[in-house]
Length: 128
View 1 (cartoon, rainbow, N blue to C red):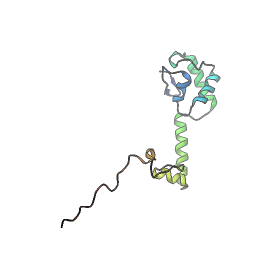
View 2: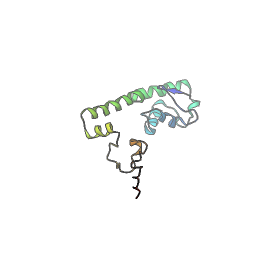
View 3: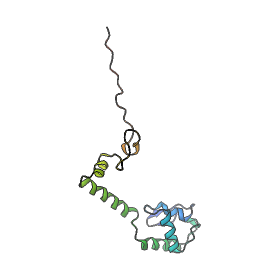
């Protein structure tokens, strides 16, 4: 597995797709990087030479886009800032609820977690 910017990318996939396994790089950015590095996007990741891998790493560095740890750090600091100023979105993040206006009566299971059943016990009827 080739290692680019600290991430092992899949061997069997096209390099164009393999680069998207790096957090912060999507398909369009991947195409730009490969154009800058002058690498064939149809090549498999396992077929790349060390020189081509170095060219790809240099191209990623020259774009100056946040990737992996830096991107996570920026995202976390943005959410922390929203919580500190007690904005509506910060409050939703704090409560673990959807922050962008989605409904919560049904759905929202990704944010709310596994369903908790309420009212599972019936009152026993008094015997006469």
